[in-house]
Image (cartoon, rainbow, N blue to C red; front, side, top):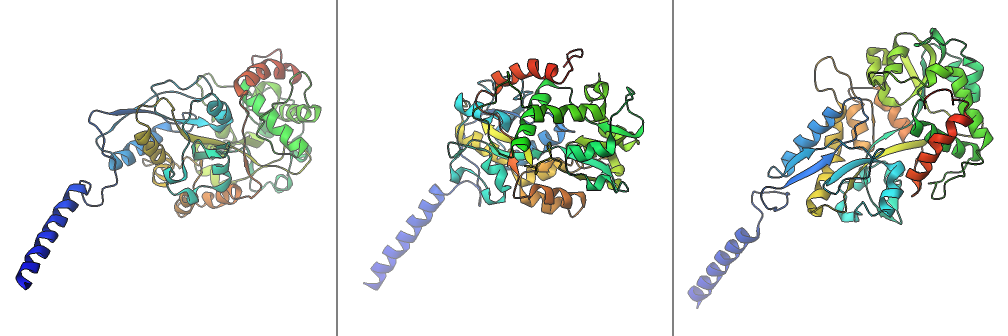
Length: 406
């Protein structure tokens, strides 16, 4: 009897072992999906960064660790110009268009179990990726306008809004580009979308009320206080310099000018510091209100979405998580060669700040700015495209710029 039971027990163990071999994934600890052969996913990273090639390299390296049998094809596309092509599986969009993309049916929502390390996301960034209670994109990088000034400029350190700034900078009477040393304000207001977005941002500060602009303000009756603030910025910068955009497309030219001594102050994004080089250590920066009221800090959020037309939704969502992952973002922000500097973009994950500030102390200050509990994601409602097109025609006249190309 004991021998018979032993045979049964031994056979059961053998069958169990065989069953485990059949149902276990290939490779111990493997976490990639079982996918058909010859699949290629098309992906578009956010193009308007100091070095987008670092993002592509980081995404490719991290993806090959997860799904080595699925190829990636990087596509040049941006959310400002066109709707996402049907064959573009994963893309990074500016969240000003999130409501429009969701309502137009371009994005797949993420369930909670489809988001890797959700607790690591900066809270307001993840909240800003929601519509109708669902997350439709994974935040990757953030950006906000900061006031840059030289660390020995103690009066500038007391500035909190553009009216304070005007008291220090005054009117720029020079049409010189770049402006004279330590004179005037460096700021790029050349783009039509830039002007329109700055108007909406100023309107939030003026009214002291955050909104996602599901209902956009009328353009036939502009808010005079918001317009006055934008005119003040142009006055400090000078019309020619505020509307100047280099022929070579260098979006960070003003950061270089500031590092070379031009301008009393500079308003731009944190990533501008990459172009300042070592001079960034001589600079201080902080958010600034567009009105005399208390600032409501607004951040653009570049987030990773999955095209609703993708033929491989499960794989595409896995790729979206890789694009937004802390390892990917950290790798993209760090220098990739000797003589390079960090991109100084604002990651949307807490862990990336912790990793970067060990080597680049500036990230400690950037982390403090990003963790302000008053921060909100800047969104434009579902009529974003229509409203922006109309605003590009109306605002130059309101800002008395009709003689210049806007």
